[in-house]
Length: 289
Ligand code: 13P
Image 1 (cartoon, rainbow, N blue to C red):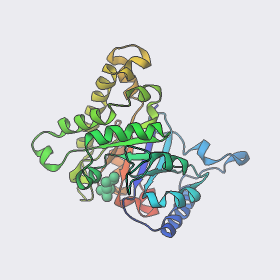
Image 2 (image 1 turned 180 degrees about the horizontal axis):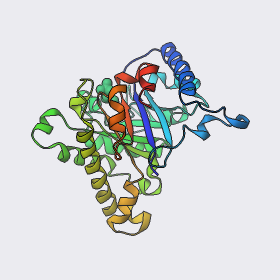
Image 3 (image 1 turned 120 degrees about the vertical axis):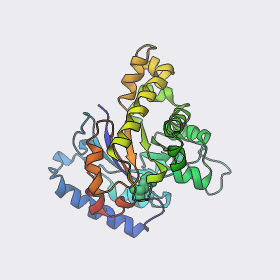
């Protein structure tokens, strides 16, 4: 029953007025495109969502916007069912951390998600696996859902180390939150973004992506089965880890465009997309849904 999530990562793009205009256009086109019936009795789209995904969960649309655009974005998407997230948080929620973002504040502003461990955070800003573990914990403690990004560089793939790298990022990133995952796996999502595919136009083939997604889900099941996530769910065997892992959405990211999304999305272990460039225009982003 895991959700299917279409997620935008706007990175450092758009002004407040551009963001507002985007959401107004996007929402109008989305209603047309999906032929969404009007919400009944004043019920907001938040409750009704966008229908059922291929694995029985909800179809969700999340926008990871720059922190300075969260307030504006929240105002415009209110009651539309579109969800807003921050692209980065700090491991603490307050204190002497000049320039950082607090997950408590994001949550108070109405955001629903935090993105953690994006490869640009890791490579440009020195974010480590230890940071990602703490940030995942902090995000959940603030009441947000959290999406953990994992992915290998080209050199790591060519050395045959891609699975080793993503398994390490996965296990470290989730190491402090296995208890929360057991209670509500839908609060966590994983995005597999091979670094060599980000912003390069070189998308992973559906087979390459699917191979990693299947391996990630299997590893997730083993990891959660050994941890208290599996045991809290239903006993101590890896079978319980399998049940919990089956509830977690695994997204693919890296040069996803309308012309390659369909084939990727047909793979049963790909539960949505995390999209950079193609999320900046309403038409190209809608083309992925
Ligand atoms: P592109 O879709 O532009 O390749 O970016 C992917 C990404 O980094 C999303 O987080």
